[in-house]
Length: 147
Image (cartoon, rainbow, N blue to C red):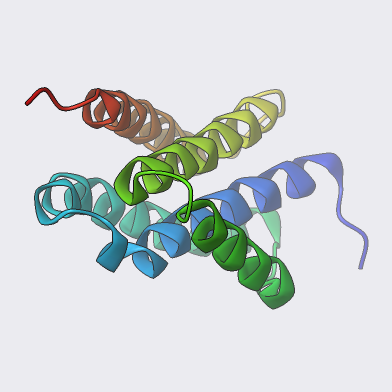
C-alpha cells in the first residue's frame, strides 16, 4: 500500500515521537537523578500523545503501525555511548535529546503543511506545544553548572 504525502508526514511524526521517547527511556541511567526527575513528566506526556496520535492516525488516515527500525536504534545507542567517553555523560544525553526534539519539530512542521482531520488537529497542536516546552527545559538543564 502506498501512502499519500499526508500519511507520510504523519508517519514521520509518529516515528520521531517514538524515537524521542525510546531514546529517553534507553538512557535514563545515564542522567543524573535530578535531571531524570525533571524530564520524566515531559516524556510521560509525550508517550500519552503518541498513543492518541497512533489511534487517531489509524482511524482518520488509515495509517497502520510500522515496525521499529531496530538497526537504527542500535546504532544510535552505540554512537551515544561512544560519545560519552569524551564528554560529560548527562550533557551528551541532553544534546541527543535536543536533537530528537528538533527532528520531531521538523516532522510536525511538515505535517502542518497538510490539512488534518478535525480530531487530529488538537492532539498535533498539543504535541507541538509539549515539544516546545521540553526543548525549553532541555536548554535550561543544558546550562553549565556553577560550582
